[in-house]
Image (tube, rainbow, N blue to C red; front, side, top):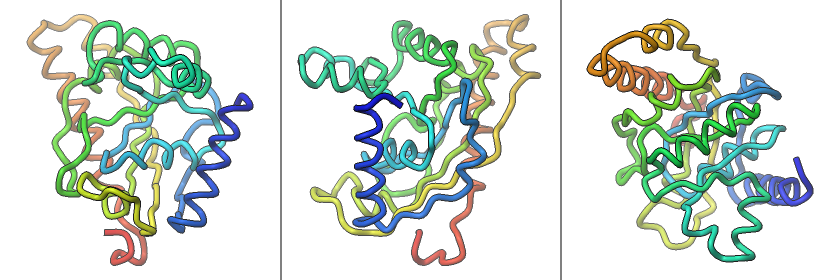
Length: 217
C-alpha cells in the first residue's frame, strides 16, 4: 500500500469498527499476492471500502471515468488504485484497464449485478463479469456484504449506525470453461459468459449470514 492508500484504508477501518461495528469473516481466503477478482453483491456505496478494508492488501476499484477530469480528485483516485471506466463499467477501454491491473498482479472488485440493489435482495448477474473472468487467468473470490443496504441504501441520505459485515468465500477457478472458450462458437461464448456470471452469483448467495441472522438481514 502506498501512503495515501494506507491512510484511507486505516480511516475506513476505524469508521467501520466504531460507527458500523463491523465484522470480517474469512479474509484469509483472499490471496495476499497475485491477481484476483473479488466478486460481490452490491447494496450500497459502502460496499467497495468495506470489502477492501477487510483485507491486508491494496485493491483496485472501479470509478467513473468523468471523475478523473478534476485535478485533485483525479490524483486521489489514481493514487488509491481506481480504474477509470464508463458509467456502466463496460466498453473495450474499461475492460482493457481492468485486464491491465489483473495482468500486473492486482486485485480488483467487480459487482456481477452491475448496479446497487433497489430492495436489498440479490439481483441476477449480468454477463459482463463472465467476459472478464474468461479473458483473465485470475481466481474469483465470491464476497457477500451484509447490513450495508440497511446502513446506506438508495433511499437513505445519511449513513445509519447499523452493524455491517463482509464474508469472503472460497476461490473459484474456471479452467474448463476458459479452455472451451478459446475454441467455441460465438453463440456458445455468450452462453459461457452468462454461465460464469450465474455460477459466481450462486456462490455469493451461498455465503449465508452468521449466528445472529437477525443482526445481519
